[in-house]
Structure formats: structure tokens, C-alpha cells
Length: 176
Image (cartoon, rainbow, N blue to C red; front, side):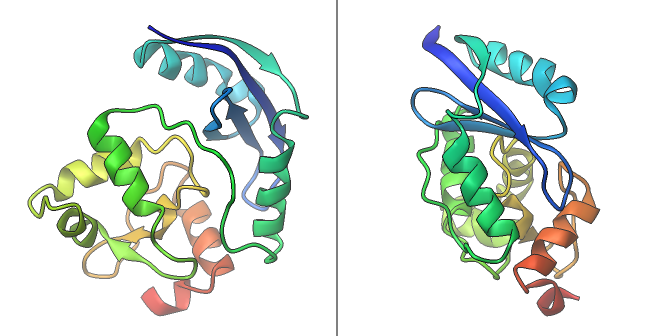
């Protein structure tokens, strides 16, 4: 078991709906689409799955820097994030998530490109699976992953949210 004394959480409004942000003593560990009431049980399940024990504690103050940076992002002021992250996942998932963080604002890549970049060119489906399990969307910009033919493909928050994020970054015209 990995012990983290507390996982602090709070929610915020955004142009793509309510977001619940969670932070451990190491950094932001989850952003969920929806209110605390809608997402708290999935946070608990995820922590349990990865053998993390912690007490959940509501604290807007603890996640205030993430809320501020996300607000700046949604308002077109920020193109990158300067937050400590606590990636809770398998070694492969963390490898993929770290690679996705390298995709610049306003640009997109395909699952196939990511697979090649991590040295696993046949792992396209595994890249998709890791992308689907991304616990920190927006900050780890999984919305910037598209199909190899340039098409929009699944997004945990729904394609409408993905399109909104890509439009905000000015990259939707490039893939339409």
C-alpha cells in the first residue's frame, strides 16, 4: 500500500462543465468531469485499485493553484501548466502520460505517433487504453490525441468537450 495522508479535493466551474480536482501531498492526482458528488466514488475506487490509502478531505485552498491555472487556460491566458503531478498508474501508463504532456498547445498527435515515440510502434491500442485512463485530463492533454487519419476519436469527457478544448487551443481547424 502506498500511503498518502490526505487527498484534498474541490470543484470548479469551467466552459466544459464542473470539474473536480484532487491533490495528494505529491501533487495533482486527478481531474474528473463532474461535481464532487458525481465523481467522489470513482476517485475512491481508483485509489483503491492502485493500492493508495488516504483520507479524502475537501479543501479549495489546497487545489487553488490548479483552479487558478485551469481558469487561466480556459480564458486563453495560459498555454501550459506549472503544477506538481502525482501520476498514479502503471509504469506503461505513466510513460504514455509523460509523452502526451510533451504535445505543445495547439498541436495534435495520433496514437500511432505516440506509440512510435515511446519505441513501441505496434502498441497503438495500448496507447489508446492508457490515454483513456488518463487521470489528469486537460493538464495531461489527452484531448490532443487524434486518429491517424486526422479524425476525432474518443474522449473520456465526451467528444463535445474534446472539440471545445481543441477549438480553445486553435487546433480544431487544423484537423477538420
